[in-house]
Length: 223
Image (cartoon, rainbow, N blue to C red; front, side, top):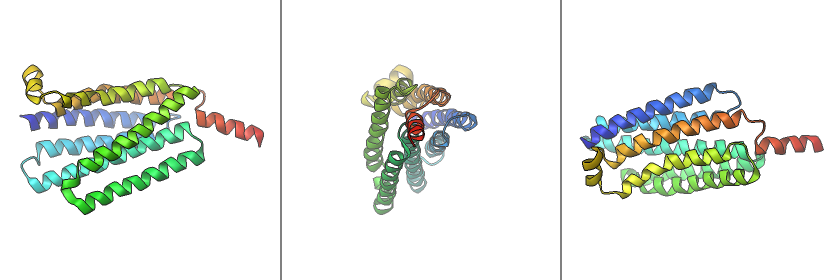
């Protein structure tokens, strides 16, 4: 029952992510990296659904599908960092952040190839925690510097992260109380954050100027 619930809620989360990706791809003034983040995360959720619903009882397929989910999650968070850097920083600094992230992503992929299925969780958690800390740090700087919408994007990120608290609770208690395990509740809880983030990113893209845009304008005036 737990695998079925996790798979169905993953499908729902994936559908929401892909719908948001389509909306972002069509939004004027929004960098394509944001849409790519949602496309990648949506693909991860759909493969996660297949992992729970189709491959749970097949060890080889289960390992392969979970590694695919991990890689896509890493790619999605890479796009999130790239979108954040491009939105907030000037081109030179944005390239530095993106370059460092590419190296980290390649390191994660190398670790998966070298260590196999047994490496599927720990490198992902460690690497993506560091990357998300960088994303939050950049948006905190943006909030301090007066970037339009930075506070709302930080709120959306917090809402996306908050459902992880379910993993700190006893699974038996959760199933007894609401009929769903921590994985399923996390999937459902993330939907609100996903919707908020896509909405706030679009709103920020239509704002008068980003920090990077202001920097560029000043450089153009002084040239």
